[in-house]
Each structure stands twice: as structure tokens, then as C-alpha cells.
Amino acid sequence: MAQQRSKIKKTEKKGNQVRETKWVWTIVGMLLFFLGLLTWHYRAGIVYYFRVATSKDKSLSKEAKYDIRNIEIMSRHDDKVFGIDVSTYQEVIDWQQVNTINDQFPIDFVFIRATMGEKGVDDRFGRNWAKIHNRAILRGAYHYFRPNENSVRQARNFIRKVKLQAGDLPPVLDIEEHPRHQSMDSLKVGLKRWLDEVETHYKVKPILYSGDKFYSDFLEKEFAGYTLWIANYNFWVENPKEHWTFWQFSEKGTVRGIRGNVDLNIYNGKIEELEELLIPFK
Image 1 (cartoon, one colour):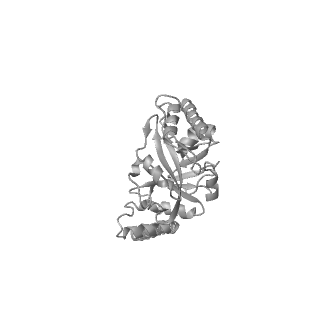
Image 2 (tube, rainbow, N blue to C red; image 1 turned 90 degrees about the horizontal axis):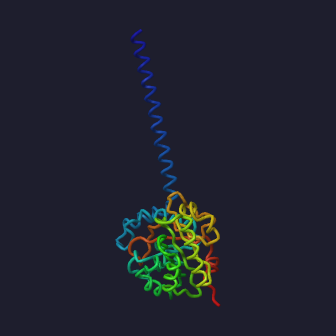
Image 3 (spheres, rainbow, N blue to C red; image 1 turned 90 degrees about the vertical axis):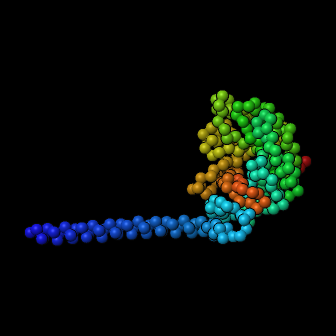
């Protein structure tokens, strides 16, 4: 009887081991399957990554891993228009080399930071603005809004510094910060004052830039009528929402002529539609 029970236990143990082995191989198989799908999905970026990793050209990005997603996004939307935005953080830019993203996707527009708050001026703005003027790239200027400073004085700071011309993109208001000493309702009043002051001066409706969550949580109800430029770097977001006119999809872009990273953007439409946004010729 004891021998029989021992045989039964051995049989059961062996059966359990077989089942455990099957589960392990099932899980391994599923992981390999999903890894294969992910590799195929991001194949263009992965090829670029290994090309950069083995390249002797040290000017290429040291953080090429970020380009995997960037290239996939741009490949997916190659019927749209691509651009960048820059500020003093990009230091001195060689604008003659600024033509493509990852040496393959044409740059058709650039937004340049001009001012911050009531008195701040980006120390690279004048140079960047002048250098891009004679390039076949559309240009626009943006103001970084400081919630705890007077909104009208901020608008006048931008107006003093930025001389927009026919053919330029509309002015941009960049709002990302929460106010420290006022309510969100008060902030919205200030934003509207900036937008109205700038629209009155340039005779064109400004563009509103913000993060996806910041916009949806606080601004959507009152500012839905503005042309939107939305930042969302979520790895799993691969398409712009319908109401995003511009989508800033990465802050880790690679552009020859710019040292380090640069923000990447997609205009959610054709070049002809983008040109309709420009300040008109009289």
C-alpha cells in the first residue's frame, strides 16, 4: 500500500512539473510574441538606433534610444508637417544645418521663445529670429507666461520684443505653471487679457500652448476656441487628438545643427492648411 501511494505521489509530482513547464514556456512564448510585435512596430527607429550606435559620427545623438519612438511617430504621420521649438537652452544653433529631424524628416516650421513674464527676454531670441528669416522654414514666436506676474505687462513685454511680419506664424502663449498666489479663475482672466492684448496689436488670434492634462483640467471650457498646441510625450500616445492643431510629441529630438535635445512637433494637417494660419499679406 505504501509503495502504491509513493508511486501515486511521484506521478502527481511529475504531472505538476510538466504543467509548470508548460506554463513557463507559454509565458515565455507570449513574451517573445509581444517583443516581436514591439520590435516590428518600432523597426524604423530601431534600425536608426543601431546605425547611430555603430556610427563614427559623434555629432549624432548620444541618446538615440529616444529616436526610436520619434521616428515611428513621424513615419506614421509622414503625410503631416513637422517642426521644432527652441529657446536659449539649445545654445548657439547652426541654422544652415537645421533642415531635417533624424536626417530624414523635413522641418517646415519653428517656434522660438521670445519673452518670459513681465520683463524676461530669451537671450538667444534675436539671433534665432534673424537667422531663420531667410530660410524656407516658417517661423513663430512664443511667450512663457508667469502666473504670478501682471498679464497685461507680460503681453506688452512680448509686443515690445517681437516684430511679426506677414508670412509669420501667429504669436503663441505658453502656459504651464499653476499660480501660487491666485485662484485658477483669476489665472484664466489673466490669460484672456494677454491673448486679447496681443490679438489687438497683431490683428491675429494667438495660439495657446499647454500640457494635455493642464489644458483638459483647467482651460478647455474657456479656451477651446483657440488654435491649440498641446504637449504630450506619453509613450503610448501615437496620434494627435482631433482638436490638437499642433502636437509636441517629444522633448528628446535629434536635429543636425542643434547640440543636445530639441522639442519635436507635428502640425495636424497639410502644409497648405498650415500656411492658412500665417499672418496674411495686405
